[in-house]
Length: 188
Image (tube, rainbow, N blue to C red; front, side):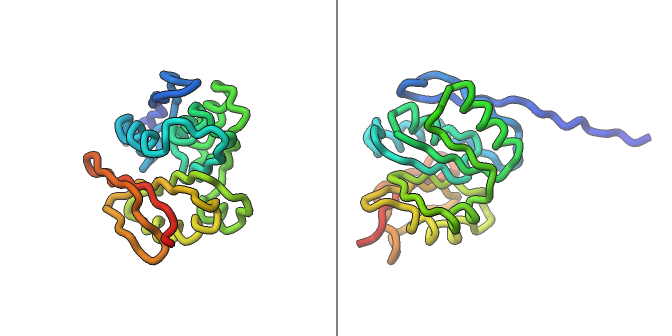
């Protein structure tokens, strides 16, 4: 007799740290590879960005839980586009957008690379946290450059430390556990 393991669709939560939606919880499903950015990392990143993002347009690639994008909106960003390929994570993003009444959030169920190849909009801050061990960061960074406004910044999470190169300067960086996080600006 075969035993079947029931798939569990637990709702996990992550908390928004500051701004209009401070302490609000975002729900997200169990999706393979989905890793919410830890609280202390988010606090550091938004300290680097200056706490408020009033008037800025943001892009949250590989949005996952959407916590970076919704945190940006909570802190005054004018617009955030959240890109998520996983159908389950996308649906959770739509639900969270509705719950928060986040009218300035646009949630798209598309592949991040395809989005960047077709995108014409410029963003002031881009959050990029691609799945680990798939080589996506090397594919994404050249495409991000064309979507970044002049003097824009890119937040990147990776399983390894990044260094300056011909295209990008590591403006700030840190490490929390196995997560390396960076704030990049275009090299001049």
